[in-house]
Image 1 (cartoon, helix red, strand yellow):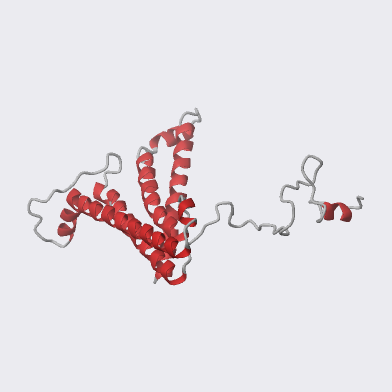
Image 2 (cartoon, rainbow, N blue to C red):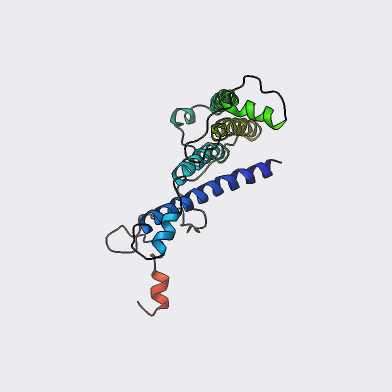
Length: 233
């Protein structure tokens, strides 16, 4: 079940990022293409309406940021100041790590609850009762967005959904840390899809294979194999 949730989280973030980028690109091309005096093409471009593009991309980036924050907790992407924590003994460090994760879960849980209350009062409660054919009483129907004319409670739903998911991720990481003593770690210097060359431990990592940088006299220079194969001495 957790793997399904992990994949849904990743797919949603990927879709929102890709779709928002594509919409922005098409909107910019449309804007500049409409100014070109090309018979037929200019009239067709002017007939297309992209006034909603900016509003939609803003909404998509908000949703991407909320769910991306939860993804960051799960994978350890978020940057934290842990200089003091790492200087403590293992027992004290574990306590403070658990306290920090618990505080994160509490904070995001509170934000999610406040966000849910706001969403319900902003038209979600009215809409749910309408869908089930129940009496709405004096409930507020809620406003709509300026361009897309979507109910704003749908847009604001990113706050409770993303915050509750982030709260769950904090609890998930905390339970995993209590069991294994390990926290998720992300190497910010690593790029997925690029194979890294593992140098010997005592190699000079400053060696650039030229006369401008320190040379490693214990190991082969960068490109030395290529020079030998090419017949160079």
